[in-house]
Image 1 (tube, rainbow, N blue to C red):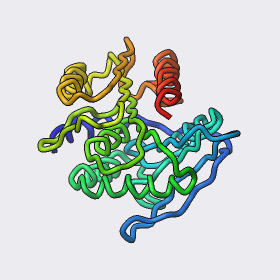
Image 2: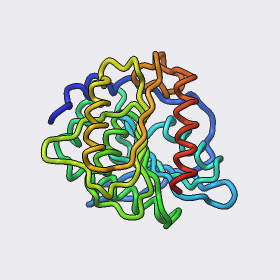
Image 3: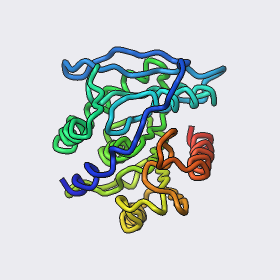
Length: 248
């Protein structure tokens, strides 16, 4: 429950990308009898590896479709998973809080849903993968990193995501490299959270890189949002591009 109230406040800022068609396609799959709908985008040309994308608190939307398409254009097979269930894409703040809260209150279910998405993604590419997420998806990405339950993971990346570690959890020394992109003007996930994570990863001996972008608020990568900051978005994407090249 630690940090839950913060997440409930800040993760309603994402908006969907206005827009046109997409290069990939939706995919039906399931987890423990729960119907799910993800999105896959095959790499343009010879694949350089697999990237798993985890959505924000509003569920899988055009935003994640767009990011997956961008990754495919760069030469990576991309799969955007579904943590809420097919057709469950909340639009009201209260509904978003409820769906996200269910998973924060049931960490095992959160992990099993992520692993189900990873298993489906491996049908597209069975090789090593990097897991990335935005806002709530960033917190979910670190949840998977702490679990140690995923194999053949080359790295984890979180963009303006939650950074707190729940009581009783921690990072193993063999956790793959972690990239954290954070807005310096984020007043909900603060620099104190960044410093605490850095100390935790140092103590565990985990390879990591943290970039902080001055003036960037929470959700600074979300196209079309009043929080979007072009410079921070482009800088974080450039670093992530190098992260992929290094680790995949």
